[in-house]
Image (cartoon, rainbow, N blue to C red; front, side, top):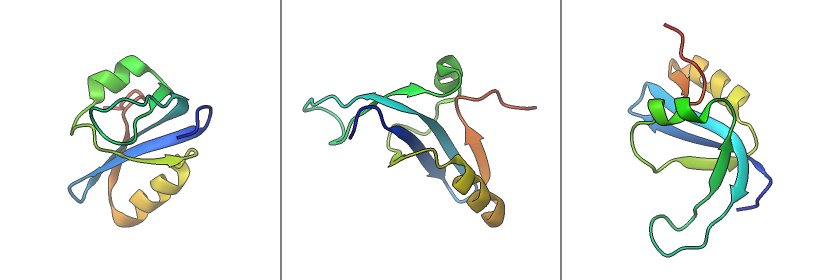
Amino acid sequence: MRVGERATQALLVGTDLLLLFTGEIVAAPDIDRGCRTKIEVRVDGDPELLWQNWSHGLHRVTCYGDARADLRSFCRYMGIRMVDEAAPQSA
């Protein structure tokens, strides 16, 4: 994957929750273990919150660009709760 590109990583959990975060790809390590495609991302928002909110494993869908607006519209239409894991969560 191209270093310097914006990216969105997302995971649909069941049928009613979409977890995501966005950021800039800062590296694409070429190592043999783990998934075939690997990236390091400078996370938009608070990286500490990302690690505190992280759940449901590592296997996420990655796309170039910031897809939050499109995903927000999709989630609203489908009745899916969307959670940006690197943003403060409202109570």
